[in-house]
Image (cartoon, rainbow, N blue to C red):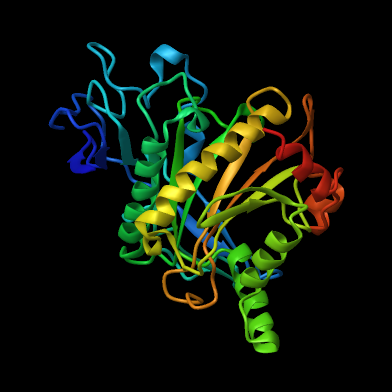
Length: 360
């Protein structure tokens, strides 16, 4: 894989990751007349829950469902410059033009005016867009295994890079797919966030992992994985180094976890063999997800990694893929119990879902 870094017209970084042997050199210039961006992201700590909430009002003007011929993630063509100046690419990563978090955020007062109990801080971090292919009309699940393997290397590269940035406490690669999820650009792409705090979900998982280790002297994910593989009723697919299963306490109508057999904290820690095996297994899972309702499944694919500076001995890297589609034409709405109290009610048992996904 060849890695080439460049700069867009407004100073944002763009990086090309080429896996095609005869890919041309990347030297195209972004000809757009773009002003330098000044993100004004901030984070505020909820005094009732202790959780950080991000504020990024500048994102209200971001691109929203453009027609295919004006897609900003496709390669540039004469007269139609995009976010990617090249006429083709394999995988491209660039700083989001409308970031939730950014490095150049100005300083802020430490608390909200008149609310000394509400801590406030600049939203310093990073938000990147990862374009998986230059083909607008495909999906991640239709990529060849070699390209998925490249994307795994890209995720690892960006995790390492963002982990080294000032203020970043956790790196989160993810993909949103489908309008039902809220996707506003249909080109196959994902994102990587560098958060300036450890996320609430990760804090909770690390606390549970610490309690379990104190009691059992073993990692909780290791025991979960061993039990799921032994009983088999919720296993969807297996590889040499990874297992995909519907968790026994699944929240979402469709939910699959892809877990490596070896405890590693993050994507950079995976071996070449583990990355190869993941690429093959993930494509199998995505094909089965699309076959579930005989339509492209809207989903979120979320990587759970260790924070940059804490809990690295407790965390166990895994990918969570889930969908809000509970039937071919019905959505699972996060209504009173889920949204108000955080108590989930699932309309299908994990065993039922796994049984349907095991069918090729």
